[in-house]
Amino acid sequence: MTKAERGRPRAVVCLSGGMDSCVCAALAARDYEVYAIHFSYGQRTEARELRSAQEIARLVGVCELLPLKIDLFRRIGGSALTDHAIAVPEASANDAPANGSRSGSEIPVTYVPFRNAHFLSAAVSWAEVLGAKRVFIGAVEQDSSGYPDCRPAYYDAFNQLIRTGTKEGEIRVETPLIAMRKKEIVGLGVELGAPFHVSWSCYSGETEACGVCESCALRLRAFREAGAVDPIPYAVA
Image 1: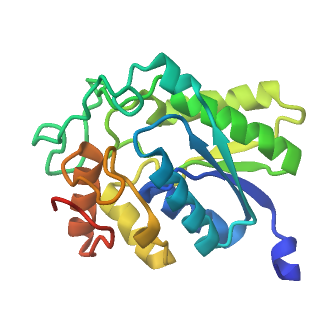
Image 2: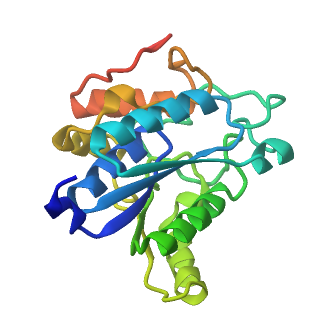
């Protein structure tokens, strides 16, 4: 690390290993000394996501990657991502409309109950220890799957919680992608040189992305609409 890099402010990035977090990490790395935090929480593609997070961290120049394992979500179930008794649904025309947005009126079975609150709490705790004033998370509202913890109001409320419940109250969660379409995120990632080739978005596949779950469908369309080629392997594309 150069002297100039040591002089940059620190930031913690929630790094899932997916497309959005990949772009978010590359974006944060332009201006901050980045410390990334990754969560294995019993999701179907847990091992694959960790490998992606490790590779993204290496390629964007993260100072340290902190991998954490949380058993709560696997034990309580209630989500297709953590409970093998609940099937991961395939995307349909209604799930992924042509304009790439969701109404958010129906919460999908891939929603993990209140997951981001746990992730952000750990990230803020580490930020306090590091002296970092920013926590980045690649939440996206408009192209999300209707998850309630991807809405701007959620992060406004969480920032109020941080101001109230931390030692100095100066840490802030940043959501730079939250109002963007997926195709715009791909375009930004291409501009930043984000390492899409090591990212992983599929809800079920680990060797090849399935190509049919909602996350795959959103990602494939985003690359297509952005005029870019998705570099990861798909079983169906």
